[in-house]
Length: 173
Image (cartoon, rainbow, N blue to C red; front, top):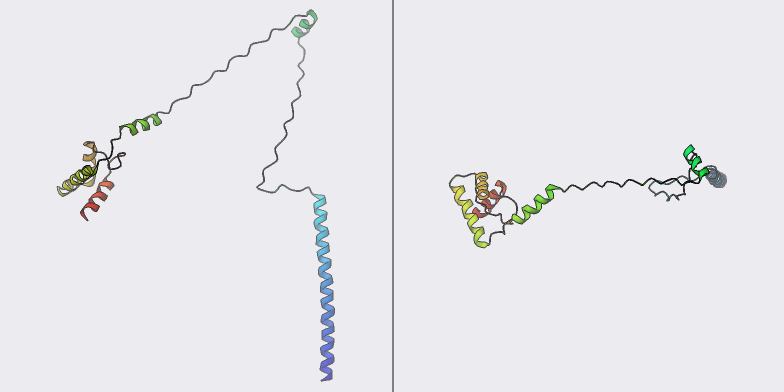
C-alpha cells in the first residue's frame, strides 16, 4: 500500500511539473506570435480592405504649358501689333428623336372603351355560351368579340381564347 502511495505521489509530481512547463510554453508561443505580427505590421503598409470606397482624390491645378514663340508672334512683339483672337466655332446641337412607341401607347390608352356594366357583362357571357354551344372554338369566339369591338371587362386589352375559356368554365360550372 505504501508503495502505491509513493508511486501516486511521484506521478502527481510529474504531472504538476508538466503542467507548469506547458503553461510556460504556451506563454512563450503567444509572445512569439505577437512579436511576429508587430514586425509584419511595421514592414508592410496596411492593405486596402475589399468593399471599401477609395478616398476622393484631390484635384490639382494643371500647370500652364509654355507656347513656343513663332516668327509671327516675335514680329508682333517687336512691332507692338496685337494678334487677333480667333472666334470659337459654335457647337452644333443634335435634336433628340421622339420615340414613336410611346406615342402609340398613349393613343391606344385614349381609344379604350369603358368596361361594360352589369348588363353588358351578362350579354358577353350569353354570346360566349351561345357560340360555344353552336360549336365555335374559344379562339373563334375571341376573334368574334374583337371584330364586334366589344370591350373586355377591364376596358383595355384584347379578347384572348384563354380568357374566353375561363369565363365559359366559370359560367357553366
